[in-house]
Image 1 (cartoon, rainbow, N blue to C red):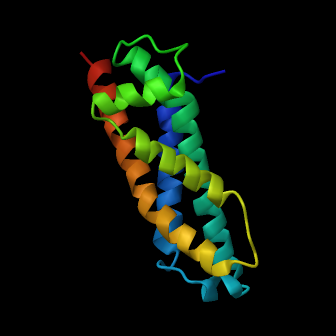
Image 2: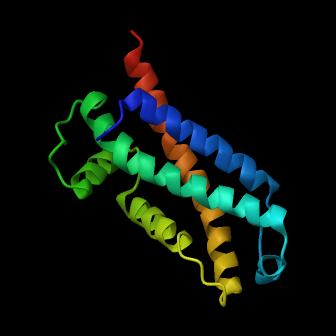
Length: 152
């Protein structure tokens, strides 16, 4: 069941803000050495960053993109595959379908912990930090367009 678009955008904003606060306190760029230490504060911040990154990406995909196309762009996409929704948003300049797929792959990679591969984890977190800025940018564009169309 999908949330109302305005509520979904609010949830995304909350995830983006909390993710950004966690990012600001993580000493990027990371390497495997920081992850090998038993630093509970750092682990808590990384967990918060990964959780919010995942929630932001999931909420955009599950509750924002399709309703945005329907309610803001006035395109009937309810029964269309996500690939069609992404193609429409790409044609309209809101996001890149290939970048969305990379975001999804990163989201999936972050949900798996490989304790024996700390260097790989650090590299993935560093890439996710850069990619999170793209998610925030997409959210800002979608939200701005929604707000502009909502107010007469």
